[in-house]
Length: 122
Image 1: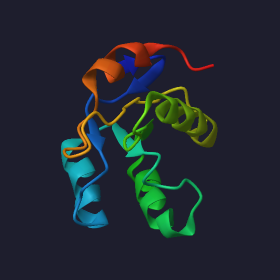
Image 2: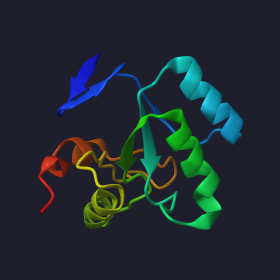
Image 3: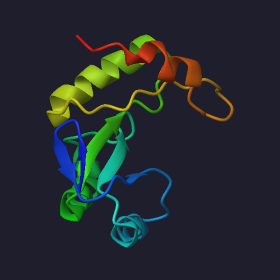
């Protein structure tokens, strides 16, 4: 067991949920890896939207801890607003902050994501 901020997890392994070719492959990846945490982009998946209902059912059925993230945000203010929404929607203080640094590659901005993004959310 591994503890993160007071939450006991069977493993420290985390997997993202984006770019899988199908829900079946996403589920298989989590089962085979024994990951304990699923990172989910708040901007890509709507918590209550009917269109994403199958996705959320899969995540629930996997029994993994949810780590919402702000992938897809283009500015620090957008990421902070999205993080606040995720905190309310998912009733968690676990949030992975990301801001896109390069529009072409969509890679996160490491300076903001690792630096000033570390401020506590009000």
